[in-house]
Length: 290
Image (tube, rainbow, N blue to C red; front, side, top):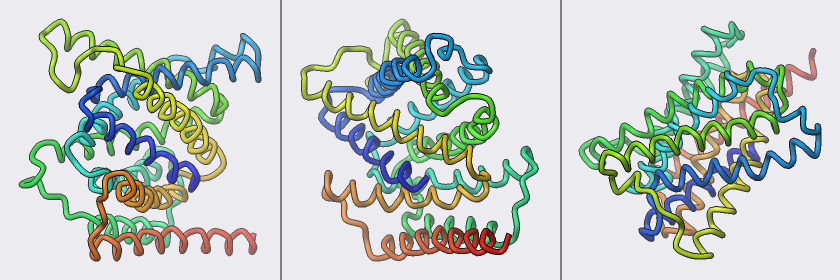
């Protein structure tokens, strides 16, 4: 889970870079991100399990899961065009709180007061990292919130579908479902006149293609790690570790865009990391005594 949350912000930063150059719109980046994920993972599925493995045991639910993350990606990459990486991810991080609540209500997972405390403390840290200002970002600030709700459902489905399908198969179908849905959105946007965020065109050159290929690799590998984590551990346990993504996002944002976090944001990041480490320590203690 930690490896996945460290890798995925790199993909987000590369998406922001492409939108900043003006070469690609957020909708195009979303489409290529999923199409390349599909192209990378499909041969691996065949290599591991043969042609029959290309058909998941729950195809429609897996396609629906791919559609969910497709819409989430459209929202998130559009927000990244206008907002700093760390700010966008910080607003997004109401998601672990939503996820833990859903795991308790829908999956009936037992969520003790220590896990709730770790979630709440991590959420407070996220609020310290950035105080979401709608006056500053306008309606764009709602996009990471929409992404958060969609991703909570997506991760919840990871837990349910992971019991019958492998992480690699799930990512192969998600790549297909995500690219299909985003492709339909781009086509409809083009037919009704299009917008600058959902324009359809090919990347301008080999440099843009190289970045997209790296994004596809990160998306494939990073999400396989996350799906595998959700196969092995309860949702409520993994949720706080997602806050580490804010820290890695801030580091990548500084390296690529010279966005250095303010002192208050560094305090928030410390709180986020501390909540995750506490939960890890707590679970290891429980494991030793079980």
